[in-house]
Amino acid sequence: MTVSYFTCETMLNFFVDTVACTAAREPLQEEGLAFQIMPNPTDGNFTLQFSLPQPTDFQVNLLDAAGKKVRLLLPEQRLAAGWQAFRFDVSDLARGAYFLEIMAGGKRVGRKLWLE
Image (cartoon, rainbow, N blue to C red; front, side, top):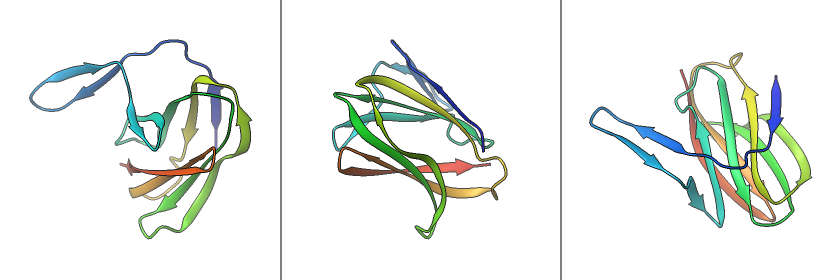
């Protein structure tokens, strides 16, 4: 597994479908967490970007479609406030649907990840 870390100051997200291309300045927000996965679907290399309002304990797990933990992508650690980004390589896994389980500050959020 390869993990790359970098901090983002500003960002612009693009969501593309067969009809139009729309720019959005804010990623998806759920449970008070602003985050996005790109690209999704992925070939196994993807970036998780998110914004933390304050320093927060943060962890990311990868679950299979049945909810079983497949891999610990990011061990629990304290992250600074602001935009964060982590790059992951899970290209060794079987193609299909997975879920990212994102735990931050006592909150748990799940998001589907498609591995093609």
